[in-house]
Length: 152
Length: 152
DNA sequence: ATAATTTATATCGTTCACGATGCAAATATA
DNA sequence: TATATTTGCATCGTGAACGATATAAATTAT
Image (cartoon, rainbow over all chains, first blue to last red; front, side):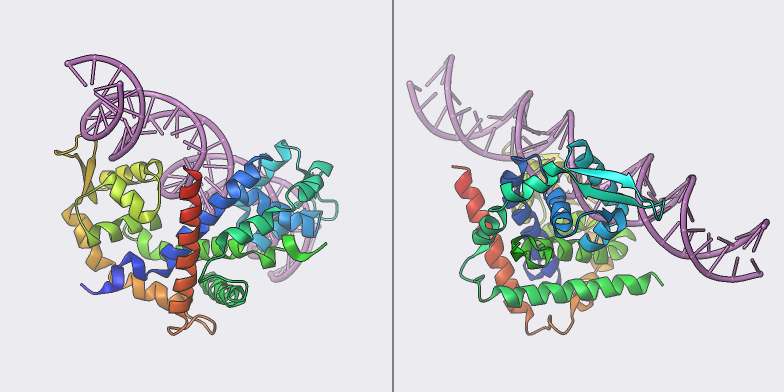
């Protein structure tokens, strides 16, 4: 049997594993404040630009609304964000940070650096990261396009 | 505000997104046979070496048994594998492929190539893949070590 | 040999992901 | 203007992930 099915030849398994392990690295840093990693991603989006409709947040994270909606409801229950019906378009739900949600930014200010350092090793150095980013962006873009083609 | 919190500067978000999108690429290819991507990973492990205890499968996939056990039970219910108590060690559950499980290998023989082709693009070429593999392996190894250090 | 510890697996609860579907508001078309 | 279509969000069901905990078998220590 050729190596087609060998786990060690699979890109996807590496991405899947690396993603899970790095999320586990975030866990202790975020759970102190009752946050999960996807919730942290929502905060990143809102810290960048507050008062966004659900759809814009979902698109930025490349997730569907059926993933984001319950996630936002949990964050609302935690008092991190508010969800209010849009005025211009009554279908939209506008998501706003509360002062608690804004305050988390300072409390989590060390997180990016801490996590960043934890992945550095011989084969991943500050100088090799741009190349890695480029390849991952290439994959993401490619798969995004494949997906859009299917929906036509 | 500096770019610390910018989503576009985050390695983890790229890994998380790339992993999700590539899993979505597998979906139509696997769902035809009632398989999910993690179940496909279990098959890869068993095709490589049949008759393994739960723990060996979990370790190979870097997953915990509380993830793998229910997954294996679903696969057993589908008639893809069997789960039998070990004879040497009565605590172990030995997982074996059924003929249906073995037969899936041939049916899925085109999957690796199909998925592999779907991610190729300007920044990810056959010649750049080894470098990408190396960096992902570095990250995985590093995070695996960090994790083991914590458990001591 | 008995007690303490470790190991292998399972159970439980919570939170994603995501396909499928529903519904009401907005927009386009007839 | 009435009807059809699209859009934005929500609900539902299923299958991971994973922390915490449980249980029984095996191993180690006393």
